[in-house]
Image (tube, rainbow, N blue to C red):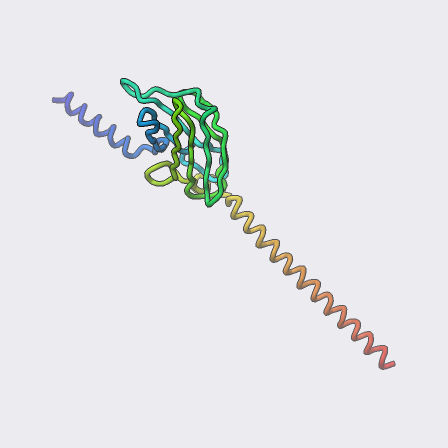
Length: 198
């Protein structure tokens, strides 16, 4: 009886720890080539943060008796593309071993990204396209939530603030030049008035 209670308590604690543990890598898998292979894609590092080096993560496995086997040697036949807000960037996939290929890039905007991976396996072409979401892989997040002890604004916010400051400085310069011109005109008119009286 005591052994069963101990086992039950250990099981419940394990479930609680799994429920509150930080999320593991969140990737999405798609079966390709008539269901013989699986292509898993997502960010290499999740959560993904703006401005930090990351990569498109691709893992190719083959369904086999007793599980899956990694598929290496595909670097020459695979390509990957990152899509965001109407822009796209091709990234070179580098073989990492164990069926994993990575294409390095630095996300510079917060939000959802789309990864498109295509290639040929056993002479059969395939294409997989997935967009980050709650059910696929993580979106890019701001750094503010993990910065310590001082939060630094991201580059796009700083660029906007610099642009605004430059516009204000330009307006101030224009105003100063106008005021200087008016002052010079006033002095000139005063001198003309003085010389006319004489």
